[in-house]
View (cartoon, rainbow over the protein chains, first blue to last red):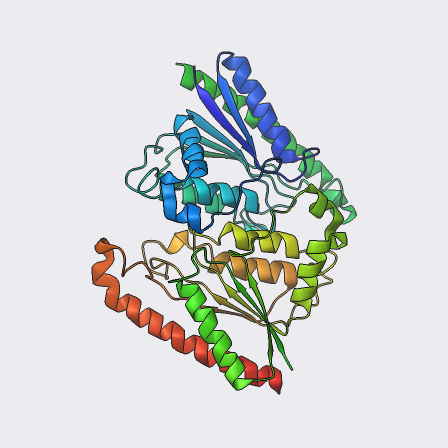
Length: 204
Length: 204
């Protein structure tokens, strides 16, 4: 029985592309692996406090940090909904990282998370793909890739990137609606297939 | 009389390179411009809540966001202490950005902050300078440059970058102490001179 740690961080509970896709992923994962366990953490509904002097000083001796680190250590796979706010991850997700990354405990050379698979749904209102004018404003994929490798030594990081999610609500983006719909359909298919493959791999 | 908005975000109140340098900057600024006003916001001592659905929906109609936006709009210059935590800004500083950036109010084409000077003290434990092995892990300068230009249209962004601040406390970095001390001295001199120049410019 494998455990999936599912983290959402989109502010809005409804109409969120990242939440829709992580839900699709979880559904597909459980269909493939019905005995699988899912641990859910909603960083918008239950935000974590910012790292403060007490928690920073205590490291793994802090109850909340120890709980978050244990939850991560017990996960066979991690799924993160990471919408782009102001070109990078929400403060709620940064707070999770600042609390859960404990150098000398689970981060740094001692990391036991190097082989943990991370799947990240990196939704964004526009497009920041290579070759687009906003390419250099992309600090979700670029950042999460580096922090997970640099801190945990993670080697198995996969992204699902639904883009142009604001096309439906912004009149100036109306002509991009077909591209947004194609991106969403592709992301839904990827979420379904990647979850299925991951569940099969973990259950094996 | 010019107003300087001074923001600190380092978790530790003592022994913080970014706090030491923003303090040097403020002292030099006030020496040059004794009638100057300094508005201080300590994001570690008084952390802001994460952006939630209520604040996100209300935009400038939310009391806290309106207060933060007014504070920023009234500043003739902004000084930000931005230590690197896990390769990017602390969650407290991201929370400030997520609350204060209000598209259609102070961000986007309507921004009135394009000419506001931003000085950022981007301290870091190691070195992430161009040519170093960790160059690609730098998400403080790269990110803040993009978010301030992309959201506020800021054109006057200056960085002071004390690096290797962990050299004194980490035995494996002992040989880097001279470089750390040189970096600190350079940053102190820059903070003094940049503040003086800025105060002279604003008072003119």
